[in-house]
Length: 243
Image (cartoon, rainbow, N blue to C red):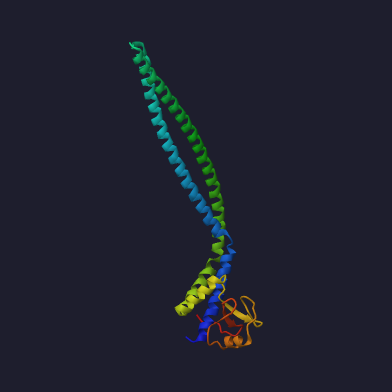
């Protein structure tokens, strides 16, 4: 393939990529909005699941604490009954001490149970809020997906044709040149190849020296703009490529 043909293919590739860019641009923020909504819904689902697990954990702890309180109450009752059978002050003091310890244990346990009940009430409210938020997000997602689907359907045929055309062009270009083109395009907002228009770069609009313009018009080598680095081509002097 001659250098002139290579430049013509690069120019054609840039035209295709511009059209693909505008098709993507026409979708606006819809694809990103759909992705964001899906991510938000997934995050809420995780938060709901984690909160439910926390509710189950606290419920198990509450039941365990209630059982301990019940045991402490039985022992308290036992110690209180033993007071009627004491025969010495030492024995009385020992049982009284155990009674006070059990009362304290019961009080602490009951306080913990109340705290756990309150915590799970808050968790239940949190789950409810998460579910309401998820419901609204799913409604928004459905609306956005419907809108995006209609837009994709309208541009599907053209996008398919352009991508097919792009493949047919890229297979004809040498890999180092294609890689170079892609690197410039990615760095320069999707535009790697620009014509010289009115003696200026079609990308950054800086004036091109006359000698460089002559070199570009010879179509014998790939020449970049000294300012923006884009590949320069002569305006209206390239033949359309046959695919």
